[in-house]
Image (cartoon, rainbow over all chains, first blue to last red; front, side, top):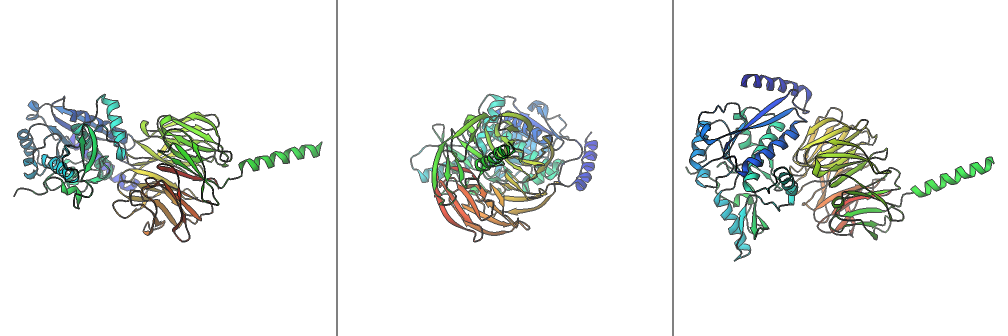
Length: 271
Length: 317
């Protein structure tokens, strides 16, 4: 099955060279795995990303699918067919799981634990901001507006800039609930991976991991191109929210020092 | 009798010519002003403001210049205005959230419906929808080749230029470009198109016959989020609205290297070039101004205050 798939891709590659950058000539099927609770909103985000990837895929002969695997079944499941794994599990399960699939990108959509960043697990990609990123964002706002109590969030349903309005609208239309941090993370993980499939024609999980860690310029509808730190954390703007209303974005203008996105969170590994 | 008939024909001809004579005016949609500013082409001063409804964005003219079309996004309508009397003549439903559109040489309007991942084709005479084309997510820019053969619709979230064959309104090819393609323009021959990509800060030059990307050029600093693009008359340079870089970027159309950046108002999005190629008009959203650029000097010769958040601009010349 996998071999057949690779042969297909190779053929497509050769045709690609001839046909320039139009599309894969043959159908390509790309599968994601999701491990975690079914009722986590991250899964809805991933499903949103999947439907958008398929919308793009119809123009490029690419099909995307997602298998949901329970935490109990993850130990015995065959993961060799997946382009990447999405997860909403606890820290220990995540660490163990990432260890068993060293050449596959394992997306963390829900854990904010800083230790998971400083551990610099080679195949860990943290979409959700870490605790320190959120604290740094709040501190920047405190410096600008002392005494102001704000929440730091990866996403907000009222976010409208940078076509965030469109994403919020699409998500709500499909799932009847508002997009939150985890669902944004799920959407973003699928979107950046499918962008890489479309753009760089990557179908091999190890190559995908390498590409995601070193080459992406991801448009996550936050108005700036995003990529990953050495720690596996996605660099990203954070929304500052007071009484459920967005008051600012961090890096806070005039407070954060350039490169401003790196004013949020821990940058280096624990050696 | 013969003389009478000839007179009637002559009279009809004169009337027709008179009614379609260009007003020389520049029309600007004010996204948050819910209006269209009318700039006198000679004095370059605002001579009127037309209330058009909530969130006007895309703006265009019929091929003979006798009708002005405005996409009023929140009302899901296109309003038809007489560019001479400035009266709203009629309106028609234009699908969900109509944003940008272009007018085909045959008079039909191709419009992107941002919410619906589709482009629609309307006959503005009857308001009837002629076709619907499924494209990628967040369709935005629309451009039509001067010969009317091809239409480009950009989809911002799918990162594509969808090339539509106008003869049967089907997609001919899909070209992946940089992040968030916003706008496109064709050369006179229709063989080449230029498109901007907002988030990756790029302009791509595409061979429309093969779909091949011939060149990619950066619009410079990281603040520049390019939107509209227009070609000058001899097709040697392109003018690109530089977004938050607050300038219009002038690039060599051959190499896509930056020639210069012309400082204009804040958050520049819309562009239009006069038929004689002598002037480029930019809408400066945050400043609420239109900048008039002299293309032989590549400098701003006048800044005109218009309404809130000017968005699109078109010249009736």
